Structures are given as C-alpha cells and as structure tokens.
Amino acid sequence: MTQPHLHTTLKPSLGAAMGRAQRLWRDVINELAKNHNLSESRWQVMVNLEKIGEGATQQKLAAELCIEMPSLTRTLNQLEQQGLVERRPSPTDKRSHSLWLTEHGHQVSRQLELQVNEVRKAVTHGLTDEQLNNFAEVLIVIERNAKALRNTGKPAGEEQQP
Image 1 (spheres, one colour):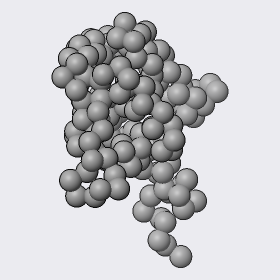
Image 2 (cartoon, rainbow, N blue to C red):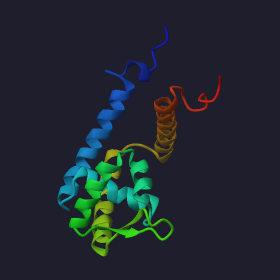
Image 3 (cartoon, rainbow, N blue to C red):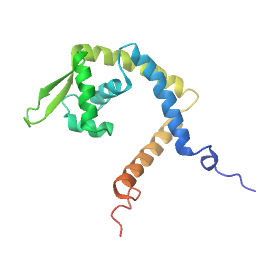
Image 4 (cartoon, rainbow, N blue to C red):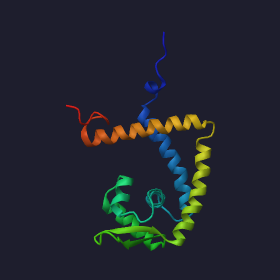
C-alpha cells in the first residue's frame, strides 16, 4: 500500500501551510523593523524599491507589491515624513514620480537587510542550497499560476488555449 503524498495530507492544506510559514517569517521581520520605526508596509516598500531599482515609478512599485495606488501613496507619504524616501518628477513623464531612498533611507535599509539575512539563515537552517533552489522554483510556478488564475481563470500556459 502506497503512502499518500505529503502535500495532500498537510492540515488544513498546502496553501495554509505556506501562509503560516510566511506569516511567522514576516512576524519576525516585523519585530526587527519596529526598531527602525517601520511598519510592515513601510519596510516592504523600501525593500522592494531597492529590488526593482531606485528611480522606479509609483505605478511600477505598486504592481510589484500587488497593492493599489492609494495604499502605496499613503505609505510613501509616511516614508517621506520619516526622511527615508523622496519622490522626484520623472524625467520622461512629467505626470509621474520616480522614487528614491534618501541617504538615511539607505542606511536604514542596509541595517534592516543585514538583520533580514540573519533571519533568513535561521528560518532556512537545516535546508541545503539545492532544497532552497527547488523550493524557489516551485514558488515561482505557484505564483505564476495563481496570477494567471486570478487574471484569466486558467493556470499559466493555458490562458490562451480555447
């Protein structure tokens, strides 16, 4: 008799287990971010701005974060008040703004990045690079399929089939 696959027996589900792990990981980072007077939404904006590159537009950052513009605008206003981020008129489109970390923003971001790297090491302790790479590949496919389902009702690759 064959054993059922682990992914089918997780309680309450595989998706719930991914969500729990992500929330626990995020909670640890949120505690660290409080030392920098950053809420979750603020540190995520700073981390993602560095990831996609300074000079990005608010629209690009909102798309990266999968959030609506009013939410991002509120968070950017708070980060500006803290002296961490500044908006500059876009050199190519006067209707939009590009986003930049201030010098203080860079300092805070570097400090937080060091702390987040330590959390990542602790959370992934006992896993090999091969396991982490395989997990990353799986997450990429799951995210792509989830986005396609949300947008088209079909998994990625099946959106255009009749």
